[in-house]
Length: 543
Image (cartoon, rainbow, N blue to C red; front, side):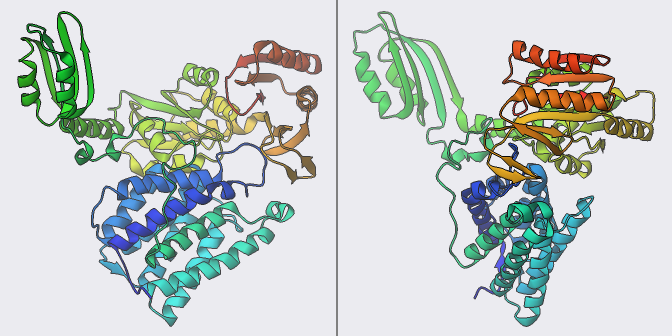
């Protein structure tokens, strides 16, 4: 048995954990009980872990402290969704406990697991049992007991996993929703997957992610720091135009250049030859070109130097903190051009694209905060699965950050309307808090899977109406749901109704929805806005 964990082993353990979650993420996603499309648990945990993998692969022969610190820092900034944030907190506590160590015995790693659990519980405002928190807590407790019996890292992890699996099986009975659906907690499954992969790597049986990552996955933009300068085979991008002073065959030049580098493009006409090639010997390339005629233009660039500058530029841009030009600033999260315009009109300095199915990371939110030229920045997550990620930015910036815990876009809009530039921070917090509770949010989306939820037999593709966070109704006919929602709002005597229609609804169809509300709620002031949001056909605010 492997008795201790050093830096190299910890690095491999985390990389294996990321691979295992990537492989199993869809199975974890499918454990989500509520059938609406979501930024699912498996996807969020996988994206969070993969952020650490990218950083760890750039660190050669790390000490245990270095490997743990790199992991914790990357997970914190890359954390997506509540499950990703809790995962990052577990590893943050582990890193804290392992600081200064060259290796960890079973006892030391068990203690680190317990510190990780403490970090996670402290950060969650209302810790719920029957979740990843329960599974991680009981697994850590079992690890501590095992270390007393045998101070061996492999043995401790084995016992932790066994206890964690038993705790996971009980989650189905600790949460009424899980019990009704007959499934265990998705986040708990993710944590057991992580621990099992770490144990496998500790035994020398590393888990490897599928080639190219998840099927069909595409990055939003290139990350140049993924590449090392040594990966650039030919260092110099060489471009030139040479006149055709001699009757030499350009194809002979093409053949010569093909042996001198790659990315060759050669275009010729009766008067000139234009060349682009990557090579390690630009001088020899130019010398050869001169046998064809005189140089008209020439440009040689060091691509390794350009790469380094690009990486430094991106890092500098992401970490840049704008100097305060005003007292208050605001950052909001939403999806859809129409909703983005609404938040901009209300005074948002930055609007982060995200929401249901696409939870932004802590780093995404942090960059927006740092770029806001204000002393105090109010953040409006507008989704319950983004709140925790937003709150993790607070200690990461020199700016004062206040997260207004808005769970829906209408709550965010209402809170921003309550903002007063002349009020104190606390006065604004109180006003925004009251405002977000004063608005009723109703939404229509679709069922992503079959489910028996809260007394409703739901079939994949059904329209689902949500009242707040509760299921309001389900139907194959969207008009009947809209009419029932209008009746509900009318019974509550709401005076101001705003209907945001989504990307999948055209203007003519949206106007039919407007007429339904006008007929059922004749005394209310009703506004129709093209929100352009994905996932939700309609998002309705009532006050």
